[in-house]
Length: 112
Length: 509
Image 1 (cartoon, rainbow over the protein chains, first blue to last red):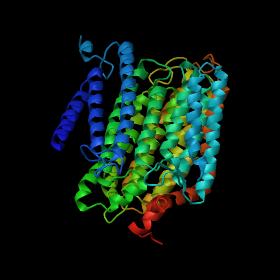
Image 2: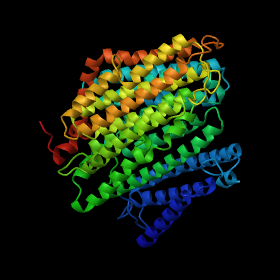
Image 3: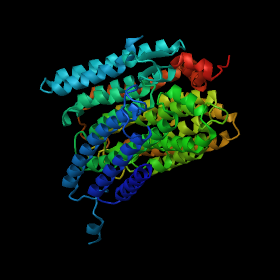
Image 4: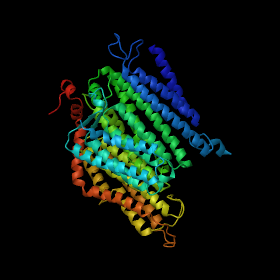
């Protein structure tokens, strides 16, 4: 389980960073989303991965660490709000600047 | 338990939320509510200064959960100083915004209050994850404030600003996850003990986490490779917002001080040594780049943004010498530079409005109205910002130079700091002479009505800098004690975790 989990994290982060470095806002936002997924999974794993253990002490022999679950919930909520905000901002910028480049300028247009 | 400790967060949060719900209220009432809340914060800041001045830590256990488990708010001298500084700065910016800029978009006052709530929370919290949450609160409010009023330049700068800060938040969470995975705690005091007692095998991972945190705070503070978002963002924002943002880079510096002196500062071989080693050259380079940027700016707002970068470089270079004297000097400079950067952003707007065209751009030759009053004000503000007597900047720089002279590395700081000051002096005198001394069309320029309220606010902010110099001695005494408190993280831990400390660590007498 750990190996699969670690590989998922690696793939998500790689794709996220790659997309983040692209020059158009849509891919950058996709990259941010993938990166925040990776971060959320990483936070979740910081309490160690256990299967079939409740997050309440005393219900079973082994219990899962409840704190990372609370942290990841907070992080998901914040990440969700931020993604919504950046999508709206990118749309606004695309309308106002008439292109979707992160620098606000279309390099192909200038060359003409 | 002292419930007043949570008021600096609750008061603006409740005011902001009510303003959102009651957005149909007449605009005057909204302004009054915002002003009342900010005034309240200023009073709370004064209370915090007095309370923390005794040297005792004030704690607030949220929900009355005991220390390492619940979230704790903790007030020490540094937090109190930052609270008071934020409140006074916020008051100045809000008064300036009330002269009309707050009408250019929706919900200015609510956003302003949320920004203050986030700032105060970040200064008060004793929990690393909670620090992340307050960072997000102040950031999302700052995104909206940056875009307030609309326009192409703001959308463009806003996009960069939002994206780099979202990446910063992701890195922050990665560092938090690593620290929690290694130590099982996020309370700063508890974390400090766990980090000090960590097995040697965990050391590389802890060092990595500390470096990731340094990058995160470096983005907020705008250290050299991470500062290129700042000039465009700050110069695109409306004047009072940019002035309020003068404290935003200082949040990064506050976090560096708090985390690296406390959390990573204990043990035989403290984890923070590597951070100081990196910070020293990077801060000097930041300072040098700020000097070049000031000279090469094309508008007064961009120039002011580079002044912010100079202040960040100076602060971090001074801090990374890590002696009580340099810390105290850095904190004095923090007060001075925050106030003056804010005053300069407001001044740029005030002067820009009086020019016939070009607003605050240097490339446009345009006559300026009300030369006498504005010219004198610009002259005084320029003296203050460069750090010449009789203003607070002089005291702070003299103290920085004096404190760093004892260090062998200090000579580097002398060279770079004084060169940057010279470049700033050249840049501001060039601005002043081309705007106020240009012959021809003198007096012929049709003077637009000068907003006396705005003028008074900028005058007051420059005057406050003079007051800072006049009150130099008591302020320096307070800051010396603050630096001492920062250098003894054991006392912080003893206040936060009275039981665990005795067994885990010996408190030096």
